[in-house]
Amino acid sequence: MSQLLDRIQDPGQIAELSLEERVTLAAEVRERIIGVICKTGGHLASSLGVVELTIALLTVYDPGIDKIVWDVGHQTYPWKLLTGRRELFHTIRQTGGISGFPRRIESRFDVFGTGHSSTSISAALGFASARDLSGRNERIIAVIGDGSMTAGLALEGLNNAGSIHTDITIILNDNEMSISKNVGALSKHLNKLLTDSTYNRFKDGVWKALGKVPSLGDRMRIAAHEVSSAIKKTIVTPASIFEEFGVNYFGPIPGHDLAALTGVMSRVKRISGPVLIHVITKKGKGYSPAESQPVSHHGVSGAAVKTPGAKFTSSFSEVLLEAAEKDSRVVAITAAMPDGTGLSGFAEKYPDRFFDVGIAEQHAVTFACGLAFGGMKPVVAIYSSFMQRAYDQVIHDAALQDAPVLFALDRAGVVGADGPTHHGIYDISMFLAIPGLSLAAPRDCTVLKKLISRELSDLSGPTGIRYPRGLEPELRFSSPDSLPRGTGQVVRNGEHILLVAVGSMVSTAAQAAETLMTKGIDVMVFDPVWLKPAPVEVIRDLARNRSVITLEEGTLRGGFGQYIASVLPEWNILNLGIPDEFVPHGSTREIIADLKLDSAGVAESIEEYARIYCESS
Ligand SMILES: Cc1ncc(C[n+]2csc(CCOP(=O)(O)OP(=O)(O)O)c2C)c(N)n1
Picture 1 (spheres, rainbow, N blue to C red):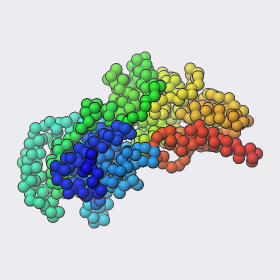
Picture 2: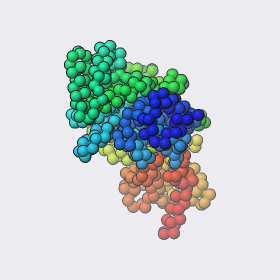
Picture 3: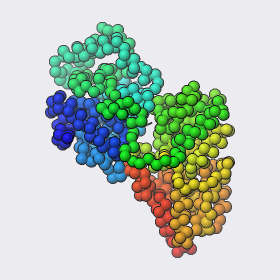
Picture 4: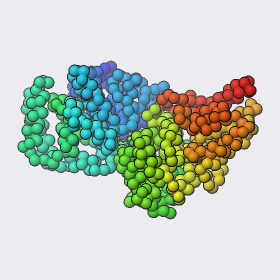
């Protein structure tokens, strides 16, 4: 029974509830999230950690006018439930359902879409500056986690907040966790703020003094700021890093205490300039399995049946451990994803050679270049979509200087429920455009292992290996021990059509070829293995008496197919892949089918092409 939750038709109703009712509402929100997400899957632990914070925000601010900008966005399930999406909540992350992240097109309350971390302060500052320029007076609030605060982008925003000095509230949701345990000096600093008694004494002084200021109107906000500054001057305290940035710091505040949260937020509302409220929460709060194991409950897969089989990520872990054992120069770097990228085993076995740099993809890449020039063999494991953050570093620091760094691009291709922010469909175009950078796309775990093992034995320049999320395909083909650049492998013979299929698409291509065979179309399937340098001469040879079609799980714009078409202009090549549109969230199987990249869709496109081609020739 969720009597209160089911009564909320408009978030404005929350401010009218009593404190007791809001506490009940929090319990109902939590219950609903656990009930739904344990079935559908999704980001459970982070959302459970911000239930009270969300209710406090909706109590103190007016979401119809004020702008609440969430960072990362995976923790917005309470927000969705309370801002008009309760009835659709059971559809979250599913095909045609609501998104697992804030999206402007989904709700007027989602003022800024996200999925990648650390954007909230910059976006909020933009909103605040627009407000100032337009003479409006809404409140702007950024809600950012301690993990997300470790990224360069967040620190760039903070730096700018201190200099623009406009009214903006940053809520730092500190649960001491990124996906894994948060790392780095900032995390230590936050911990110090939590435990430092001098700081807590200072905080108490500020609250007491502010409490004495009788209900201040806008005109008096400056006076309140002066009270706070005066107190700061009277007590010698260690400065929080935020104050050094010119941002007023308030906290730490217990993040599951609704009275404390709303009290502090309402009082801080009166202070002008940039302020930061440091809120302490527990990831997974209210669901004991998630509280005790927040890492495995960061994202849960719901009731989906798990199929056994070799996974790309675990094969990467295995081969990396083997290489590290043989060669002490092999080092591994993650940007806050030791578990997701399969590096936790490496971290355990080789703690000195493992680096979790925080959510800092740009730093990870440049750091790896330094390691490489210092004589190490760095492997940077980053999901394909998060590598977008570090594109300049890949060009400027790695490729331009020919740094021998191996980029392990996990989750390449369509990833499913996380949707457009997370699909890894731009890496081929990104990497192909960079001179001197090599890129391979293994079709299965055996090829992945051979490639990584070979590259790490003699890493000659910046090299990317892209591989998909999840299990290798059931249909596999034997592969030679060595897969040198520029050769590739024919995995199926055929007379009429040469189908050049990239990585995850090789088995799909072979299945489509079987279907087409029954229709009299005989397809040769060629796996180039290396997309750059590509086996262009081999493809040219094979194409002599066949029509050429390319197939990739990546955007067509600037992709492998377009590259092949550009180097073989004499052929009328058909490129199959992802059109120039953002791909929605949903089940991977359904998305792939919609894109006509499953074997039935590929067979249909080829049959159609063959028909038109035969008619015209
Ligand atoms: C640029 C980028 N890199 C990596 C990720 C993957 N990721 C999603 S959530 C997360 C941890 C965020 O930690 P925090 O901000 O503290 O939020 P919490 O989950 O603890 O609430 C990471 C690393 C991401 N979303 N964006």
